[in-house]
Length: 221
Image 1 (cartoon, helix red, strand yellow):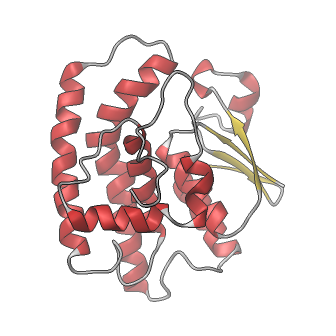
Image 2 (image 1 turned 180 degrees about the vertical axis):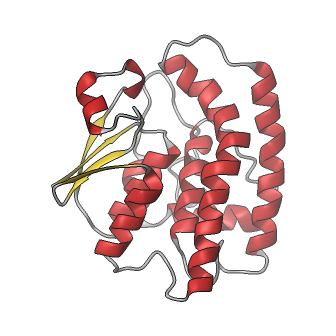
């Protein structure tokens, strides 16, 4: 069985978990307190980050590389289009959420509210929280613009781009940081994606001392 070293609310770990579940790959989840710098974990990934996946006798790190490996070795059901232009658009949007959205929103909201508490690094920085709360509005508006023109974020079928975005938004939804009333089309997109079987284990995550809002695991919102 595959083994994934992860942190429950990490959007990068969640993206990998979604890919594994969509491909019906059974995986053992091992929660890793990577910030403690355990020597055994550093042997698995000298960068000291999660996710780390053990699959096919290979130890892999970096969520983008992991997801590409899964897609290439388990092509069904596909999470990348066959045409180069479609694949480019998916990868562009994955980069958008894992780079731009992460820097402007996830790191300012989720990491300030949750990671600092879990890692015992003090209290949230209010300036960062305010910046993240402002930035997420721009991203919601951009997603609405995309979804007004497409069935899914990158086109007419669900792809890795939707999983990347869904991983970030599901983590932020745990802390009630998403205004789902801003755009009905974005709310409908998230309701569709969180209803997929691949999301079940993610929506079952519980962080000790922190409870999600009532709608978090409600498939009907």
